[in-house]
Length: 400
Image (cartoon, rainbow, N blue to C red; front, side, top):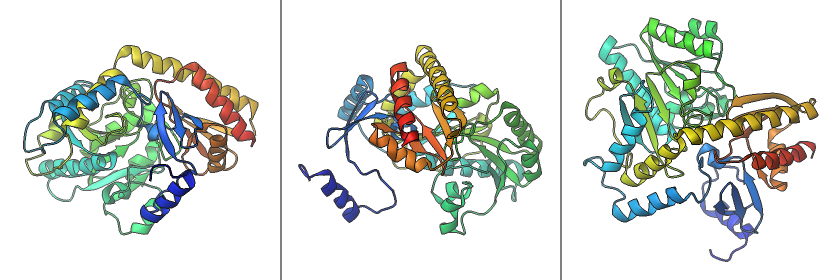
């Protein structure tokens, strides 16, 4: 299809691809730094980053070198054999927090959630016998679209068309400890919590709430699972978002930015969980393949560097100030600022989708999180001048 117009390619998309996505009306061809370029030559400042995947932007030399070197050496052999890249990345992840002793690799965030559900139920069966299988999740949650993940996703539009989904799930109110306490019981094997909700409107968990969740899990013999698929890996200014809350999980799911855009997911866990898992309990053909894990190690080393995280914190503060200034300029339009670090939400009076489309016309890519929240997920390498450019584009889009 080389040489065809954007309109031709979009028509081919409709002809050959399942229409399960609503895509923008242009064709992205290449990226450079924090910018994307479409087939007509238009440039966009990217404040979506592939939905928090492209943390290092586009064309990072270290990532490209890691891809080329590992692809030339070994791409895939399956988990029947040991490979160095998988072990090296697992060691980096496990050593990133005292909460973790083991890692399991898969291919996506949804797969990581599915595995975490299985591991929690396996742990409960090993320690408490049958009947302790309930998962508690929260209103506004989003954990994926596979059958287990969608069952613990609160938004009805994702679950309703596929009912009945996996049974044994109850929902509590996010940041409401009394609601969580009322939802708990001795049948609960795990509580699954996003330290910062993504699809749920960029609500950030309060430290007191998370500490209370940790204590309730202790009381009821349940595991605490953090979903850091979107909010982890430096996005909030620390390697893991939960570091700022002072609470350690039993299990944690990670994915999006881990391999610089290559498919990967991981489940990190304490030894007490790992001890309950036996050979054959879970598996994957492609998970932990040498290519994805070699690139993952490169990405993780860069993002976990203290100087890199200091930069994220500095730019996050600059973005926070700029957003507050914007809110002060348009108090009737900007109703609330949410999120942490470089994972921010702007709740508005009006349609977030309409603002997103207007932003495209001003050369800015933003996402949404529900009907009235604009979601900002820039590459972590942005500089203050990129924040200024984004705020100018967002200001114009809000006035459109």
